[in-house]
Structures are given as C-alpha cells and as structure tokens.
Length: 280
Image 1 (tube, rainbow, N blue to C red):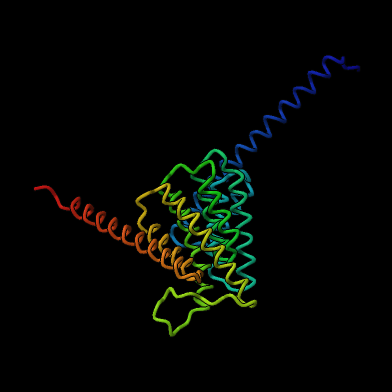
Image 2 (spheres, one colour):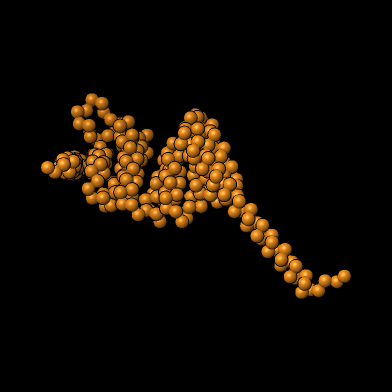
C-alpha cells in the first residue's frame, strides 16, 4: 500500500517531535539527578568527607555538564586533594583543578558570584604552584573584569598584586645587603655584570609595585596598608639609587607617606573605639 507524500511528511514530523520531547525529558531528568548529586555531595563536603563528596560531584558533572555549581564543588574537593600531596602528584591534581575551575568559569557568564569564585580559585592554584605571572594575570582579570563592582575587593586585589611586586624587589635587594651597615636602606652595590640582571629585576618590580599600589589607593584613598607599602616601595627604590641627593629625596617621600599612614590609622582606630562605646 502506498503512503501519500503528505501523510509521510506528517508521520516524519510527528516522530521528530516525539524524539525531541523524549530528548528534552531526558535532559530534564539528568538536571534533576545532577542537582540531587550536588546536594548529597554538599552535605558530605560540609561534614569534611571530601573524598566521598567528590564522587557525587563527578557524577553530577557527568549528568549535567552545564552545572556550574557542580564544577565549582568538584574543584573545591580537588584543591583539598592537592594540598595534601607533594611533588608531581600535587602538580597533577592542581592542573586538574585548574581545568575544572576554567570549565566553571566558562559556564558562569550570568553569575558574577560564580565567576569571581572560579577566578579566585584559579589565581590561588597558580599561586600554590609558584606561577606568579599566571597568579597576577588572573588576579587582574578579577579586578578589571566585568564583575568588578565591589570597590573594596578591587582595591584589595590591586594591593595584593603590588605586595607581590614589592616582595620581588625586596628579595633581590636583600641578597645584596651589607649586613654590617647601620642604614637598612643603604645603597645595594649591584652594578657589576653578574648582578645587573638582579638589579634590573628589582627596579622593574619596584616600579610595577608602585603602579599597582597607586591604583589601589586610587580606588580607596584611605587604604592604610596600601599607604604603608607605598612607602616601602619607595624604600626599595632608595636601595637601588646611588646618587645621594636622589636617595635623600626618596627617603623623605617614604617617611612622609608612612607618617600620613600612621596618622590615618590612629584616626580610624579612634573612630572605631568611639563607635564601639554605647551611648548612655
């Protein structure tokens, strides 16, 4: 018996519609099951049973690969794992955690909470791996990204970047310190060929540190800790400067900034103490 073309077309469309409904139904069921796995894993995670929780989170991502929360929770358990390891095993698990958090980041376009969570963990993992450049890149992505709306968090992030640059300069200048010198900020003799790369590194780090500490203070003009580090960064430049007049100018600038920071800190402490006293 022949089937008309019209009837055949209707039949095909009906089958396709049924398959579409069936597929959507499966997707919905998987989403529900994935959410349940996340909930069960979260209970175990909060109890400190991280290994057991990880099993549920892996199952949740298998059921629903688009579940940002499942990926974030899975990443958190992997962080617990690699912190308990050493050597190559630690690096291996840390790299897996990076992939998991980067997946979460890609899925978190509409949630700044998830976006910032993922970026913060990515930066932390790179820091734990000793990769300062990548740590800095991801910190700045958070401070300068689309979800950077909290001024306090932006200032803190910029401050953290500046402090790392200060540490970079300080590590170099300390290596060339004259232990017998009374002045802790004395000139470091790094002008011979073998030391010139270290001097250049220190100069670059001090300059970059000042750049980001200025940005942090620009966001929060009363950021006391940032002001103290600004003074310390000028001290780093003082250590690297041979000309005595320039050294004195840098010292005066650093002293002035430190005094302003101390005065601001005392004012804030007084205001906090006054606010803590109940009105009678």
